[in-house]
Length: 144
Image (cartoon, rainbow, N blue to C red; front, side, top):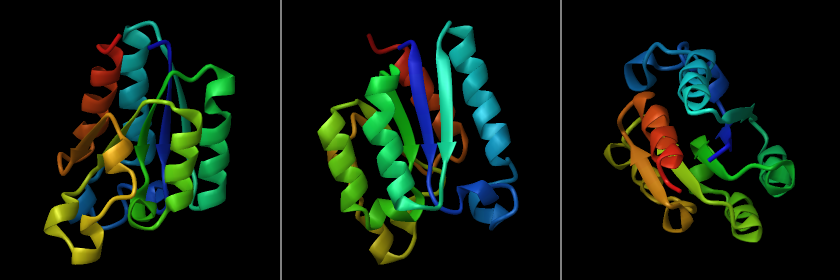
């Protein structure tokens, strides 16, 4: 993989501040820097995007392939449980993606147990903290 897109959904801009007992103390910048370091070591390129707005995420996914992106890592946040639009964008562009969740969504409220993306993702990393992002990128970099 030469070019990977990392997308973070709503409220993930507050990592390190929001519920640190659930999400840890790393900021989104920390997460992006760790993932970028791994991608750079493998000679690739990382593009990052965070938005609290569903339509912006859809547009980034729709344009990703045209911009040379080969795979996506996404933490859709609350859109995991609500967004048919993000699902449809992935189906339209046919880009492989890994779904990441910092917390274990299955140990949380019942409504968080369903994902509109998991069944079309090439993999899901759930509940391993921010290390899940690193595991996702290592998987993608080692998949040819």
